Image 1 (tube, rainbow, N blue to C red):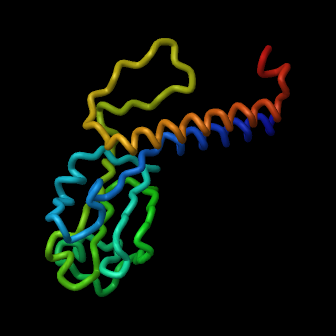
Image 2: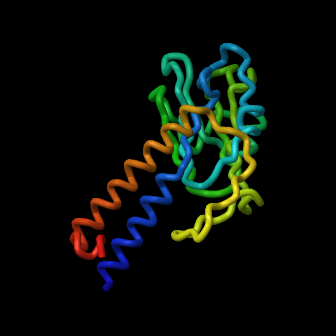
Amino acid sequence: MAFVVRVLAVLVLVLKLSMAAVYKVGDSSGWTTIGNVDYKLWSATKNFQVGDIIKFEYNAQFHNVMRVTHAMYKTCNASLPLETYTTGNDSITITTRGHHFYMCGVPGHCQGGQKVDINVPRTPSADVAPTPLVSVSPPAPAVKAPAPASNVANSKKSHSVLLGLAGAVLFVVFGSSMILA
C-alpha cells in the first residue's frame, strides 16, 4: 500500500508540473534593448504561478540576466547579483510566490528598460481555483488574459505526453487487470 501511495504522489507531482506555463520574456522580441520592449507591460499581462518557467532568450555576446533584490532592481545596481545567467537561452523555474526581479547587467541596459519584475501573487487569484483530481462536471471557463499561442500549445503537448507517461507507469505498476477492471 505504501508503494501505491508513493506512485500516486509522484503522478500528482508530475501532473502539477506539467500544467506549468512557459513564458518567453518579451515574447517574440526576447530579452533585448532593441525595439523598445516594455517589460513592465509585458509582465503585467501575465498570470504567473509557482512552477511556471520564465525563459530568457538573448544574444549572449551583448546581454545577460541577473536576479537581483528589489533595491538593486530600482537603482539598476548590478554589483552583487543573487544569480547571473549568461547562456543566451536561460530557463528559470519559479519556485516561490512574491516578486522575482531580473535585469541585464551590461552597463546602460537596465537604465534603458531591460529589467523585469515577475510577480507571483502571494494569494491565489480569484479566477484560479485548485483543480480536483476527479471532476463531476466540467469547470466553468476562467476569464484570463490569453497566453502566447506557442506557450499554450507547448503546455498542452507536454500535458498530453505526461498523461500518457503516467498511464504507462500505472500499467507497468498495477498491470492491465487493475487498470482495466
